[in-house]
Image 1 (cartoon, rainbow, N blue to C red):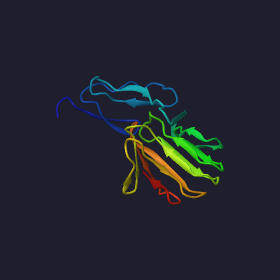
Image 2: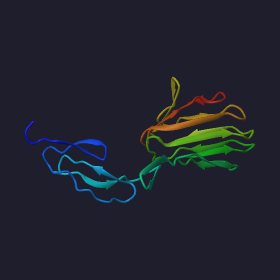
Image 3: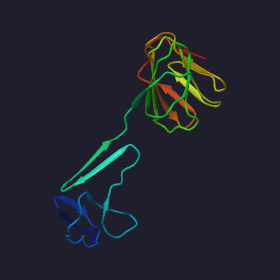
Image 4: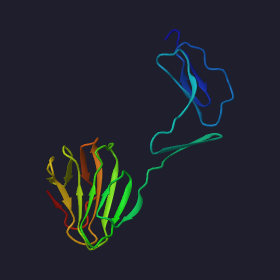
Length: 177
């Protein structure tokens, strides 16, 4: 095709569509060549870390990794507001109520382990719902409740702010209302 030439740049076949190739230049650690449909040339740019993502630039390499993990706390009180990416060991001889947040992002994860003898109820606000296998809680005043010591459950927000799903199964016999 007239006006299009292919050239080899740093071992990568690049189609400049008639534009001049970028001049050889020294770049900083972690910089990449980035094309744009709205610009006539290739630019040098960098990746930007986001929530839960770490980027480490080094000479000739870029390392991208996840920084999300569950941090664990032991709760002995009667109530607790659940926090994303926090695991809670409920440790009480009396009933405990843990409440899902009214604002949650898709992927926010919550893990609960009933370590004490008291039952744990996971509650939430109006308009929210918990999907547990083929059972769903109500969207007005439902909850899920453990039935025995060492029951465990992991929930993930699957629709921002409103829906949570039990994933990876649950240990014990949680009731859904």
